[in-house]
Image (cartoon, rainbow, N blue to C red; front, side):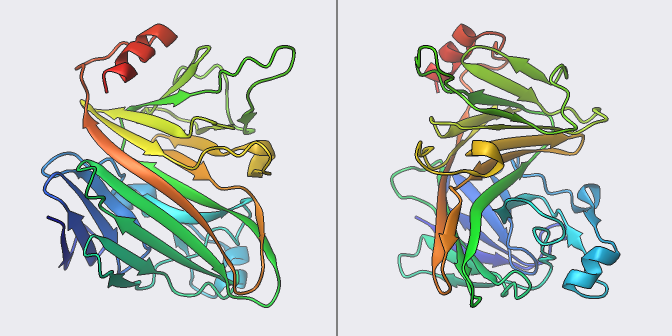
Length: 314
């Protein structure tokens, strides 16, 4: 049975809407955001980073000139909808106003409607569903509508700001393309490829979130497999996103997946193809989230074979 209820206050985020099916639960903010601010097994740990004070935000004169005096952007944590390519200040919409929501007739889906972003000419919706056939899963659909009078070119960008202390497993492309390259790996200016948080293998990359790190780290990939795992305290969060479309144009020189980490969190980010969205039309990106208990208390993630063996037991 699916339960949907309001919780008047969750930490310092105000009111949230909670969904659970007796196995997993998700909290979505409605006083700000929307953000999926909690996802975990009932009574278990939260895979989302939800320390609002730790995460901070940004504002400056350029930001206030664009969005209005006194406006600021807060990271807030959890899962949010952004648009790519990233630009400042446009991307950093100050989503600190109340969100409307509707429980759909099926009783297992809740739709969340952000206020119109008049400065960016878009309207964002987040639809979350607890599938009846997967008791440890959550379906997350992100929709962005062009509410302006001119076409817009963007890609929906699903950023899942996750909790500290885990290790991410990224399965890279392994197609045999002969003399041609078989994967895209993009690197940001502040990324040190020799950073000890990252381990490079033939089939996999692992990235460790380290609260003691002093620098950020970001990579992008053209992930045809469309799934990434995050291991944290004996549980595994798996994020499935749309399969990479080989003929589509993706942001950041071809990235359908990106990951970013700093001392406070790790982001697991999916990207839809770039598309031209006419006035009144919309774009959509769907993800499937799952949580499982790890079959091994301290899995060996030091080689392709070891990771293959671990993932085969999930």
